[in-house]
Length: 75
Image 1 (spheres, one colour):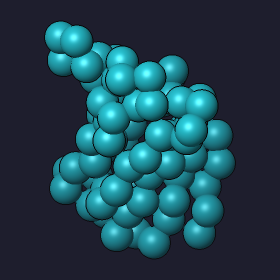
Image 2 (image 1 turned 45 degrees about the vertical axis):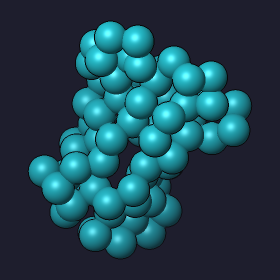
Image 3 (image 1 turned 180 degrees about the vertical axis):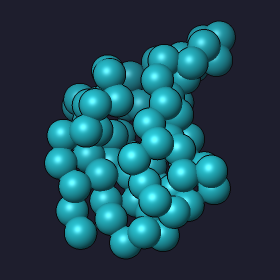
Image 4 (image 1 turned 180 degrees about the horizontal axis):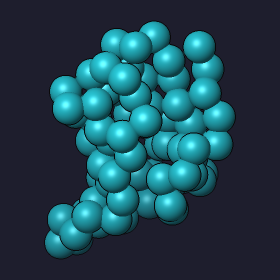
């Protein structure tokens, strides 16, 4: 998923991780490994403050888009 300001790209992975990179040079910004099964989707909030991730573990995690720190989990 592209951030709305086009500065970052977020990717969900079968290794249970979510990664965010800079769009300009693909520099890794952070990696989150909070899901217990495949991460299947990722999306930035309209103001790019948060990233929502979905997983086969039946949870949605909301992460701070700047740091990757967990904000909340929906079961």
